[in-house]
Structures are given as C-alpha cells and as structure tokens.
Length: 487
Ligand code: GLN
Image 1 (cartoon, rainbow, N blue to C red):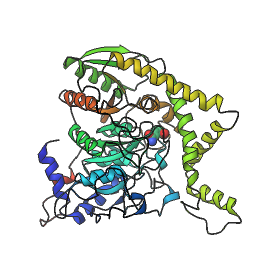
Image 2: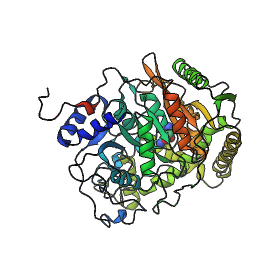
Image 3: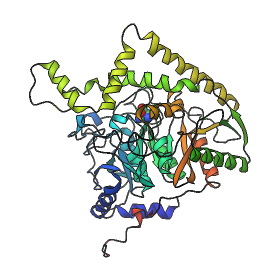
Image 4: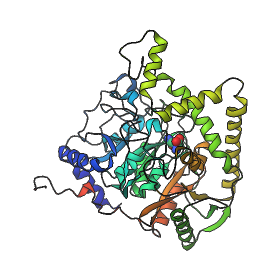
C-alpha cells in the first residue's frame, strides 16, 4: 500500500463519529463487526485494570498517537482482548462481557499508532471455517453476499476486503486467518507459534493457536507484525530469535499429488506457479507423506484442548448464569446448555471422548505422534527448500449454509492449513487474483521465524499477480472531508 493511502486512513479517525457511522452503515450488508466504536479509549494507568499490570515489555497503551494525532484504524477479532470493548467470542456465553484489559499485541499496536475501531465476527470461540457458527449471525463475503467470508476470522477478512479498515487482527488455530483471507482476496499471516504473544487471546486450542494479521497489502502485514512481535513476560510460550533464517528465497517447493482442488483454486494455484517461474525461482514438486493425517490429528488435539479450555465457562466465573438452579451441578448444566452453540458442544464432547482414560493412547497420544512426524517431515523439507507453496483451501468461498460444504466436509478441507499449526510454522496466504467472480488465495510456508522470507517472497510475487477489489469497492478512507455534505 502506498503511503498516500495510509495517510488517508489516518484521516478517518480525525472524525471518529462520522467514521463509526460509515462503518455501521457498511456493516449492515456484511455483519463483519459485532461492535463498532471508533472513539479512542483514554490511556490506561500502567497498573490500571488488574490483569494488564506488567504486560511484558509492551509500552504504555496510547503513547504513540496522542490526542489530535491520527492513528491507523484496526479491527480486532472478538476473541482478542481490547479494554472497554466487548469480548464475546461470538458466543451467547459471553454476551454481556466487557473486557477490562488489552491483549499484549493490542497494547503494542496502540503504542505503535494503531487504533482499534471495533470487534469483528467469528465462528463461536474460533470453531469453524465459515463465520456461520456465530451467535451474532453470519458474516457475508464482500465479493458475493450469498457466500461466506470464511472462518473463523471471517469478520476481520470481510472488513479489510470491503474497505472498512486497512488491517485487522485474527487468530489462526487451524487456518482461521489464512482461509478467510483467501476467501476475501486479502493477505493473511499466521506467524510462527509464539512469535506474537497470546496474552489476551481467549483460548480455544492453546498449543495450536496464534494471533494473525489480515491486510490489503504486504507492507501493512509487515509493519503490523513487526510492531506486535516479541517476547512477552505474560506469555510463557512466546518466542523470539536473534538469528532468524535469511529472508532470501532461491528454491521453492510446490505441494503436488492429488490435491482435490476445485476449478477456481486449480487456476489460482497454476497462476502462482507461473508467477514463481517467471520470477526465476528454482521450483520443484514435492509430496508430503504425513499430509493425510493432519486433519484427524488436528481435530483430536484441538478438541481435547478445547474441552479443557472451555471448562471455565460454567456460569459461575464467566458466562450467563441461569436465574434459578437446584444445585451447582444443574447451574453449570443450564449455563452451558444455553450458552454454547451446537458446534462448540460437539467439540467439547469429542475432546472429552478422546481424553477418556483408556482412549488416550488410541487417540490423543497417536495424534501427538502424528504431530511429531509432521514436524520432522517439515524439518527435512526446509533443509532442502526455502519455501513450500500449497493451497489454502480446496475451494473458493462457498455458499452460506450446509448445501455446498457441510460441517464435516469443511473440517476435511482444513487439510492444507492445519499443517502449519501442527508444525508451529509460519504461513502467509497470498491473493492470486479472481476466477469466475471469486478470489483465490494460495499460501506459502517456511521454517520457524521465517516471516521476513515469506513477506519478501509475497512482495516479489505481488508484481506478477493482480490484486483485485470486490465490485463497487470504495474504501472508507476516501470518505469526503468532514464538513462536506454526505448523502
Ligand atoms: N476450521 C478450523 C476449525 O474449525 C480452524 C479454526 C481456527 O483456526 N480457529 O477448527
């Protein structure tokens, strides 16, 4: 993105009421946001809201952009903590929860001159690939409102694609940043596990999930990543390295074999191949012997962790509390029955099943072994090649509801994205253009902490690939200057 357009994005926050109204207006057709509020929150005192005290090395919130100085608007998925905003995870369970603290990545971004302007829609607790599983109703795709925006960070992807914000935060446990980015025609970065602090993310499957970034330019992905990354004392799993792998790419591997792609995705993948060839990279086809096991391993580990993580939503500490209950057990039962949607209940049940004593070896431990095998296969792949290119999802954006892809087929289709989460590796979804009316994204994966390499590759490849906007695209950064008449 050119500097001019970032400057125009800064301009919108000089009149937050007007920008907020324009966001609300555009949101009617898309339901990308669950909450919109473009007004700056007063800076928290350092020891302000209990939990925020000592949030790592994060600078004090609000420092970089003082009053009157315009920040860049950023949308934040509603499973990431932003002080003073709701934090519902698109669940009835947290319907009325207002968040008392900022996630570390949010406070770092505020300090770097970004300003949250709202909370975006998602599949409840991040469980899904469509944003249809939301207590707040589905998000629609700006390219075709009969279709899903992808998920679970569908609201963030739609908000960027529709020109409501230039950049948004999401979370990616099994593809939830990359797949909606691909469906909406924007960039989506899933960093190395631990590279962005998870402090302030509502946990779904802790060992797999990371915060990620969706934006309409490689430069913004890079800027936001750099501003948010780094060790955080509040997250024991946060990682950093003084010597990341070189940002240079010479050899690119392409995942080959029977990939089961639809026509549009086949065309997008071919276009990526052509772009790689015409930029002169050495490229080779490879197969992964472990890839067929990624989905079963992912859904075993993710549901096991979800069943433990979601136990805290019991109507006592968090969650909607029934007005009357005979005893504590029936209180918890009533709270969870009413508060959770069916996909969440299914996954909690699956998770408790795979963790049952006697079954652990059969399911959970086998899944962990597969996970190790996947990691090992990537270790040896990246000893030979600098990058791996592979599809994000076998189809472009599908229609709302279960007619085109039902809930089970959607899970099977996570076969390309879950690999990076199981192996803790970074991956970036790159728009390859539009095919028969819908965008297709293709991802590139690299070794741990190779974000700079992925970003550099995307920059080079962008010169070969068209970056297209949905029909009628008009970013809110081009709102006429305030004071002029608006219809
Ligand atoms: N589609 C995957 C799932 O349903 C990915 C979700 C995610 O990354 N949060 O679990």
